[in-house]
Image (tube, rainbow, N blue to C red; front, side):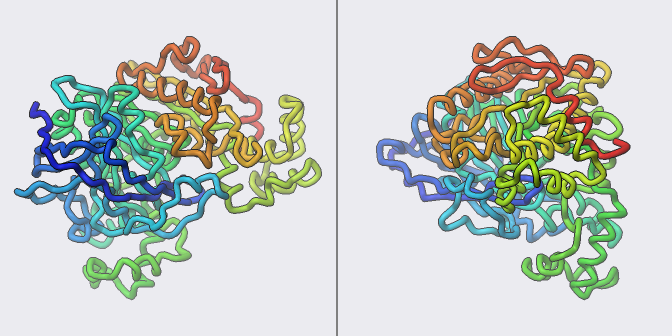
Length: 540
């Protein structure tokens, strides 16, 4: 392994920001990067990658490289698989976050993500195949590698969010942390396969970008102090769905060795016919047809985005196709990842930063009005029974809390359990571990309960950079200690057990052991099974 070389000039870190997002709401949020003091940056580390040399900086004892190119400008491969970048002979600065993928505007989760908000936001461009690396002092030691795929569904977000800063996690666990940018929305997933052979994989090119980033890790991470044979992929919300997607792709097999799905269980992809119908409408609105489809390669980004407005399902995520021939966990767990240990879980009231972020009136519902909201959110269910069961099983529950628990149990929790059941049932498969976050954030007077994305700052041990979500008190740090140590143990060993939590058995469909992260962590079995059953849609 070639070690990092250090020059004498002090590096200057430019301010960087990016967008983080979460699934369901399609809201993307990000954070401004602080400019370090002179004492935080003292040397200019240089690494020679497969494509050329890159120069980073050192922050709090961690060596950082931002905006490292892993793929060519996707404007040259629009709706087609990515290409490797051309080699360079000079030394490229890797001092600040690079472009994010083109994407629509997004909200801020009702203020929960205020401390992550960019000002100004990073530019977006089709030239977006960049990644960021945080590593402890480089030497011949091969460290576990943790590759993060950001949230925002498959539509918005960036790997360059302040919340994903890897300094503390890399330093705490002696691991290498990598975050990536890749194509999103229409440019990553518009399924044009019926329009010609050159577009055969267009319904999954964003996922192919992620695979190319993992190939970059395989080929280069040893020079950054990482072990290419001990790679964990993890993500929250849309990022968790991306992890599920990669677990079912032949081209990703062998590029990662552990997987973590945080509040992002993806059971199925969009069917080819549905994706094609949405694509046909976009193509028609662009004034194109099969005979003139080549013209889409030169259309301005804004024109393509405008044509997709109001078209349901257009570029909504991977669809069944050439590189994604099956659903990730339907009818069973994809056998490609039978040997990959899985850690999966969710938060108690996910929707308080999703639907609650766009509809704050939900926080004012009473037991007289919550039934109407539940009927809207869960049509076809016995709403009276739902209310009765939650009030009986949770005597101190508040009406808004009941709404957000029921909707989270129906979607995030139930699908996570389904996924874990199927993965743990794989013959001869690797172990599965399940967690549940049940620590109520004190921000906003506690009325946001346990929101979607609260776990991000905890897993990254970044509560100081997630203040608007979690606060920065000792209880928040205790949860971060529990979760980050569990994630680090899983990266090292494929087993999350550590001295911050009680004994943590493997998950099975028969017992459904679940580790609950809260002020005093504890192991429970099949949490809220009755609630998950009564909120499920009829026939499921």
